[in-house]
Each structure stands twice: as structure tokens, then as C-alpha cells.
Image 1 (spheres, rainbow, N blue to C red):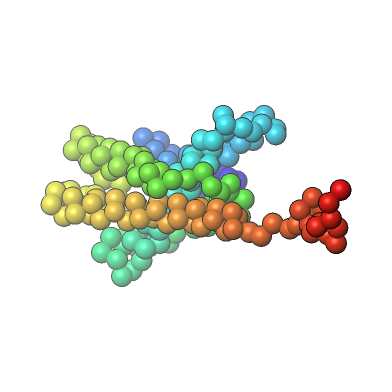
Image 2 (cartoon, rainbow, N blue to C red):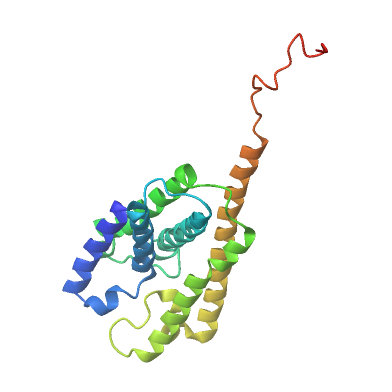
Length: 221
């Protein structure tokens, strides 16, 4: 959470000094990091020791924010910061500063480790992988609509949704491919969750004093 908050603050300072606050909020990177920070802030203010059926939604929300921050990290490292990618944009050192590293590398890695090690397991269902797509799909729609309405500054936040450069056909293919990749990533998270649950259920139970056989177990009293 601290890494995400630090990265957001650093990015905000740079953005406000440059293009302005309006363009700061349009990036999925910022939104996914904000959601992650908000989730952990909620855990901090939640009543200590509070548990029960009323908290069943927390693992689902944690899975969602983990998926979104992983999307941020993977898209950045595989598409935007990869020289072999057609959407490579890291053309100068100003694109690869400390807060960019915090937002795109440190925070996604820490969030994944936190989910794997500390995240409660056994609450996810296959349908959640599809439900989690709601926010990324809404974001893609927002990016496309905003690009039509805005005529100055940064029209499209990411090159793979840049209709002005690639056209609607290519962008539609990009969006379908990304949506499928995001869904599969969500499926992987659910599969890992269910795998951990299966191992827990299959773990051998140590015999207790009540169940352990004794030399007198066959004697009638």
C-alpha cells in the first residue's frame, strides 16, 4: 500500500507540473493503484477481529484489486516498456522514473505476494473471473469515448486504444485480445485460490485422544 501511495503522489506531482490534473486521472495505472490503496485503507479502519458472513466479500474484492494491479504491471512491462512491442512508448528516461517503477513494478509484485501469502483462500468462484472484467471493460469504453470528445492534449491514454493512429478495426481487435487476456489472468487467480483450498481440505488430520485407538478399544464395559 505504501509503495502504491508513494508512486501515486510522485506521479501526481509530475503530472500537475506538466499536463495538469485532468490527465492524471485518465490512466488505468493510477486508478488501479488507487483501488489497491483504498482496499488496504479499508482493512486498516475496519474493526479489529471483525469476521463472519458479513466479510465474505473481502476476498472477492481483494482478488479484483489484485487482478487490476497485475494488469497494470503486465501491460506496462510487456507492451509499453518492451522495445519488441508495437506499443513501446518508453522513449526517454523521463518515462522510467522512480514513481513509475513503484506504480508498475514494486506495487504489482508486492500485491501479488501479499495475495499469495496472506490472502484468505477458498472464497472465489469461477464466475468471479468474469465479474472482475467489469471495471477494465468500463475503462476501455471510457478511454475510447474520451478520445472522441477530447481534441487537445492526450486524447488516448494508451497506444493500443489510439483510434486516431490505428483505426477502429485494429483497436477493436486490441480490446478483444486484452479482455481475453485479462479474463484468463482472473481465471488463473481463481484456480490458484481453489488449489490452495483443495490442499487444505486434503491435509491429513492428526489423531486426537478421542479418535486414537487404544489397547482397550475392543473391551466391553
